[in-house]
Image 1 (tube, rainbow, N blue to C red):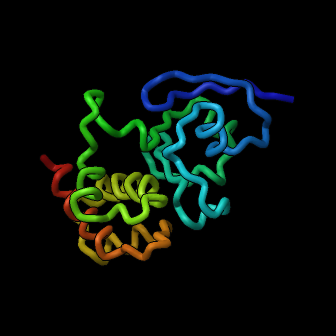
Image 2 (image 1 turned 180 degrees about the vertical axis):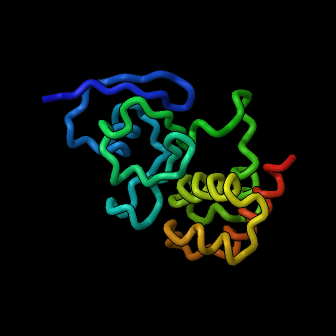
Length: 157
Protein backbone atom coordinates (compact mmCIF):
# COMPACT_ATOMS: atom_id res chain seq x y z
CA UNK A 1 0.00 0.00 0.00
CA UNK A 2 1.50 3.38 -1.04
CA UNK A 3 2.58 5.81 1.66
CA UNK A 4 2.32 9.60 1.35
CA UNK A 5 5.62 11.39 2.00
CA UNK A 6 6.60 15.05 1.97
CA UNK A 7 10.00 16.69 2.09
CA UNK A 8 11.87 19.71 0.84
CA UNK A 9 14.22 19.01 -2.06
CA UNK A 10 16.59 21.71 -3.19
CA UNK A 11 14.47 24.29 -1.43
CA UNK A 12 11.17 23.21 -2.93
CA UNK A 13 8.44 21.29 -1.11
CA UNK A 14 7.59 17.95 -2.73
CA UNK A 15 5.17 15.21 -1.83
CA UNK A 16 4.19 11.91 -3.39
CA UNK A 17 2.80 8.50 -2.71
CA UNK A 18 5.46 5.81 -2.82
CA UNK A 19 5.70 2.12 -2.11
CA UNK A 20 7.19 1.62 1.36
CA UNK A 21 10.19 -0.20 -0.17
CA UNK A 22 11.12 2.74 -2.47
CA UNK A 23 14.70 3.79 -1.94
CA UNK A 24 15.39 7.49 -1.55
CA UNK A 25 17.75 7.41 -4.54
CA UNK A 26 14.97 6.00 -6.72
CA UNK A 27 12.52 8.59 -5.42
CA UNK A 28 14.96 11.37 -6.28
CA UNK A 29 15.80 10.02 -9.72
CA UNK A 30 12.53 8.43 -10.85
CA UNK A 31 9.87 10.53 -9.14
CA UNK A 32 11.61 13.92 -9.07
CA UNK A 33 13.66 13.41 -12.26
CA UNK A 34 16.82 14.72 -10.56
CA UNK A 35 19.27 12.40 -12.27
CA UNK A 36 22.49 13.99 -11.03
CA UNK A 37 22.39 11.61 -8.09
CA UNK A 38 23.80 8.35 -9.44
CA UNK A 39 23.24 4.73 -8.55
CA UNK A 40 26.60 3.01 -8.55
CA UNK A 41 26.95 -0.10 -6.44
CA UNK A 42 23.43 -0.09 -4.93
CA UNK A 43 25.00 -1.16 -1.62
CA UNK A 44 26.21 2.21 -0.21
CA UNK A 45 29.86 1.36 -0.83
CA UNK A 46 30.71 3.60 -3.81
CA UNK A 47 29.16 6.93 -2.76
CA UNK A 48 27.78 7.86 -6.19
CA UNK A 49 24.39 8.42 -4.53
CA UNK A 50 25.63 10.88 -1.88
CA UNK A 51 23.24 13.73 -1.10
CA UNK A 52 22.71 16.01 1.89
CA UNK A 53 19.89 15.10 4.22
CA UNK A 54 19.18 17.59 7.01
CA UNK A 55 22.61 19.09 6.41
CA UNK A 56 24.72 15.93 6.46
CA UNK A 57 26.09 13.83 3.62
CA UNK A 58 24.32 10.49 3.32
CA UNK A 59 24.28 7.69 0.78
CA UNK A 60 20.68 7.60 -0.34
CA UNK A 61 20.77 4.14 -1.91
CA UNK A 62 20.37 2.59 1.53
CA UNK A 63 17.71 4.95 2.88
CA UNK A 64 14.03 4.38 2.28
CA UNK A 65 12.13 7.35 0.91
CA UNK A 66 9.70 7.05 3.84
CA UNK A 67 12.65 7.54 6.22
CA UNK A 68 13.25 10.93 4.58
CA UNK A 69 9.68 12.08 5.18
CA UNK A 70 9.85 15.62 6.57
CA UNK A 71 13.54 16.00 5.72
CA UNK A 72 15.47 18.74 4.00
CA UNK A 73 17.23 17.19 0.99
CA UNK A 74 19.87 18.80 -1.19
CA UNK A 75 21.10 17.08 -4.34
CA UNK A 76 23.86 18.07 -6.74
CA UNK A 77 21.24 20.03 -8.70
CA UNK A 78 20.58 22.17 -5.63
CA UNK A 79 24.05 23.47 -4.79
CA UNK A 80 24.60 25.98 -7.61
CA UNK A 81 23.39 29.54 -7.13
CA UNK A 82 20.05 30.52 -8.59
CA UNK A 83 21.85 32.45 -11.36
CA UNK A 84 23.56 29.23 -12.45
CA UNK A 85 26.95 30.01 -10.95
CA UNK A 86 28.56 26.79 -9.83
CA UNK A 87 29.18 26.07 -6.17
CA UNK A 88 32.87 26.73 -5.35
CA UNK A 89 33.44 22.99 -4.92
CA UNK A 90 31.97 22.25 -8.34
CA UNK A 91 34.21 24.91 -9.88
CA UNK A 92 37.24 23.49 -8.08
CA UNK A 93 36.53 19.99 -9.44
CA UNK A 94 36.33 21.46 -12.96
CA UNK A 95 39.42 23.62 -12.56
CA UNK A 96 41.62 20.89 -11.05
CA UNK A 97 40.55 18.03 -13.33
CA UNK A 98 38.79 16.21 -10.52
CA UNK A 99 35.88 15.32 -12.77
CA UNK A 100 37.38 12.22 -14.42
CA UNK A 101 34.58 10.40 -16.30
CA UNK A 102 32.04 12.26 -14.17
CA UNK A 103 30.08 9.33 -12.81
CA UNK A 104 31.33 9.64 -9.24
CA UNK A 105 31.58 13.43 -9.36
CA UNK A 106 28.18 14.39 -7.89
CA UNK A 107 28.73 12.13 -4.89
CA UNK A 108 32.32 13.30 -4.50
CA UNK A 109 31.26 16.97 -4.60
CA UNK A 110 28.47 16.43 -2.07
CA UNK A 111 30.82 14.54 0.27
CA UNK A 112 33.53 17.18 -0.19
CA UNK A 113 31.15 20.01 0.74
CA UNK A 114 30.13 18.13 3.88
CA UNK A 115 33.80 17.47 4.68
CA UNK A 116 34.73 21.14 4.37
CA UNK A 117 31.81 22.23 6.53
CA UNK A 118 33.18 19.99 9.31
CA UNK A 119 36.91 20.51 8.57
CA UNK A 120 37.45 23.90 6.90
CA UNK A 121 41.19 23.35 6.36
CA UNK A 122 41.55 19.69 5.46
CA UNK A 123 44.98 18.33 4.59
CA UNK A 124 45.55 15.57 2.04
CA UNK A 125 45.33 12.84 4.68
CA UNK A 126 42.00 14.12 6.05
CA UNK A 127 40.55 14.45 2.54
CA UNK A 128 41.56 10.90 1.65
CA UNK A 129 40.15 9.59 4.94
CA UNK A 130 36.86 11.45 4.57
CA UNK A 131 36.34 10.49 0.92
CA UNK A 132 37.17 6.86 1.63
CA UNK A 133 33.52 5.94 1.09
CA UNK A 134 33.44 7.48 -2.39
CA UNK A 135 35.00 5.45 -5.17
CA UNK A 136 36.41 6.82 -8.42
CA UNK A 137 36.65 4.02 -10.93
CA UNK A 138 38.99 6.21 -13.02
CA UNK A 139 41.33 6.33 -9.99
CA UNK A 140 41.64 10.10 -10.28
CA UNK A 141 42.14 10.58 -6.58
CA UNK A 142 45.19 12.85 -6.86
CA UNK A 143 43.24 15.51 -8.77
CA UNK A 144 40.18 15.02 -6.59
CA UNK A 145 42.25 15.76 -3.48
CA UNK A 146 43.66 18.89 -5.17
CA UNK A 147 40.12 19.94 -6.12
CA UNK A 148 38.80 19.48 -2.58
CA UNK A 149 41.64 21.59 -1.16
CA UNK A 150 40.94 24.33 -3.71
CA UNK A 151 37.20 24.06 -3.07
CA UNK A 152 37.79 24.39 0.67
CA UNK A 153 39.75 27.58 0.10
CA UNK A 154 37.11 28.96 -2.26
CA UNK A 155 34.29 28.18 0.17
CA UNK A 156 35.88 30.59 2.68
CA UNK A 157 35.53 33.57 0.37
